[in-house]
Every structure is written in structure tokens, then in C-alpha cells.
Image (cartoon, rainbow, N blue to C red; front, side):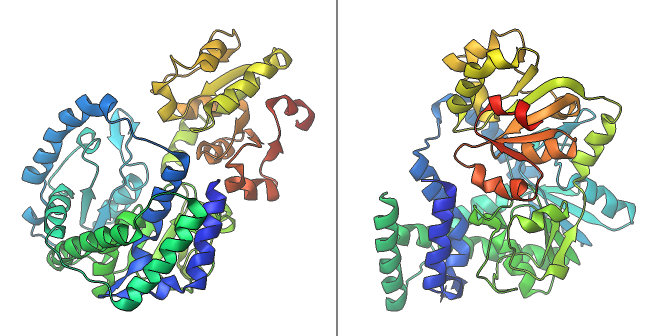
Length: 437
């Protein structure tokens, strides 16, 4: 079952049951749980399991940072007002020897250059310690810890009408997905946590009194959005990844403008291409185009690097490791004149040494596997040809002017709009690139 199949089911069932209008106890239930439920089902269908054992030492090591965040970067220790609040992403990349949030860093610098006051909030205790701190950087670990504790004591009861609807949904989900998910339990847990964290953000905004809020990932910021809208504070989300119609996260074909209470007022897209990929539940005039600042800097850094003729960069895909590697290996004799840069997905580095296909490829003289710390953008600047399936690297490769090819493997439908708009060529196998050059 593909992400597109799951998306189609979600879109149909929410339309049939008017789920976006489902309100219970002051909470719009489906609006709140939709994205997380989609993720749970996608993982269950793929039978993904997180290997906690391998990360045990890392988790123990990072726990001390969470304690430090709670003690020293408590948002409520700051009583000063701020013109703007930025809630950063959980991703950090290195630039000039410093770790930055690639999505919000440059906007923050722009705000400060206008002599406006700014407070930044971080939320990923496992990587946030890498970034530089100052008195205007706080952490949300305190709010998360308090909300998790408070949620356990919150009481919430569904009405008879709610229970009847949940029963209908449970039957439909069971029959279609054939997986063991307790929808009522999932709904209750998320509602209780939302009700637990909302008062903290209401209090924070009353203290800071911002004129505007920016963040990344609305799904983890619904309480912030709710508190801001109650106070008439405009909220803007910044794009941070794929936005396609085969994934429900940023696709709302049946939701009227403004009909998603927990969605931001405005949205920043990197370019007009993304308007074709999915439909947002806000008015067109509230969709703003702003170039990807981080990518803009990296392109400038490598603008003097020329394309290397017959150089292919292959972007592997988590979940399709063997399918891609097998296709490359079988057709390598046809590609002797090409230098192949084989970029693994971050998750694949842990299996690189034990994967027989990848190890066989690594011994080939014209195949090179970059290290996880190598600069991907330098390789994109050099590569003449790019081959991928549906990873975000596809869009970075387009920015660097690579000749674009997409392998016809499960999941490629997520970026089919690139083929439809002639930004890429769909191929059955890597051997087909020559005839399409």
C-alpha cells in the first residue's frame, strides 16, 4: 500500500463524514489528529520499527541537555516583550563552522537588521545543543515536560454522537488497513496533550505580546497557532520539505479557505512550483514566495564550479535501498564512461557496511559513496545528471541545474507533478538515461 493509497482513503473518509467540522469539548478533533494518525498508519503499513537499542547511549547522553534546557532556557524566565517570535525547526545544518536552522536563521537575521526585537524557541533536545545560545534563545522542553505531566490528569469525555462517529471510523480503518489501531485512544491522548499545552502558550504570548509569529511544521505547533489566533496575532509557516498531493500533510482539497483552525494564517513557499504540488487551506494572497535562503547561500558558494561531464549523482531512498542498488549494479556495464556519486539516505548509513549490494557497488572503480558529513551541495554543483525517486534532494538538484531523472519505483507518484510539468523525465531503469539525454 502506497502513501497515495492512504492519502486517497483519508481524503474520501474526511469528506464523507465532514470530519473537518467535528468539534468536541472545544476541540476540532480531526483537525488535531489528522497528520499524526496518517503517520501512524504509514509506519504500521510499512511495518517500521525504531531501533532504540542502537541509540541507547545517545539518548542517555542527550538526556542531560533536556535537563539543562528546562533549568536554563525556560521560556517563562524571560519577561520581556518581543516584536517577533520564531519557533525553529528540529533540523540543524553546518554553515561557516556553525550549526544553524536552515529554514529560519536568515529570516531571523533579517528581522534583527530592521531593529526589531526577536525571541527564538527551540524544541529538539537531541540536536539543539549544537547551536549557539544567547539570552534571546529559549527552549520548549519545559512546556513539553509540564504538558506531558498535566495531560495525565486531564479528563475528557466524548459525547454519544462522537462515539458513534468513532465507531464508524474504526470500522472503516480496520477494514481498509487491517492493522491494530485504537482510534479512540489515539484521539483522547492527543486531545488531552493539546488541552494541557495550550494554557502554557496562552500565557507565553500574553507575556511576550508579539506582533507576529513564524514557525516550521504546523502539526507540532497547533497549540501555538490556536493561542495566537485567539489573540489576533498573525502566524506564518515556512516551508521545510515536500508538499505534494499524494501526502495529506500539506494537501487539503476539500477544506475551505480558513477552515483549518490550527493551520497558520500565511505560508511561505520557496517558489511557484510548489503551488502545483498541493492545495493549502488558505487564500492565495496569503501564500508568499521567498527563495530558500540556505540553498541560495550554497548555490552562491559553488557558482564557479563547472559541471563534470558524464557525472551522475544518485540519491538513494529509504525503503528502496535494494531496488535502486540492484538496478545500478545490473546496468553498471552500460555506464562505464560515467562517474557515479551514490548519495545514501541518512538512515541508510547504518546499514551500508552490512548491505551486500551496496558493498559490491562500493568496490566498483567508477562508484563513489560520499560520507554523511560531506557537503551534498558541492556534489550537486558538480553533477551533470541526477537520478532519484521522491526525496527532497530532487528539488535541490533542480536548483543546481542537474538534468533530472526519476526512477519509476513505489513513491515516485508523490513527485509526478515534476514530470507533468517537464521538470524531470520518468525512467524505468538507470539504463534509460542515455536515450533521454
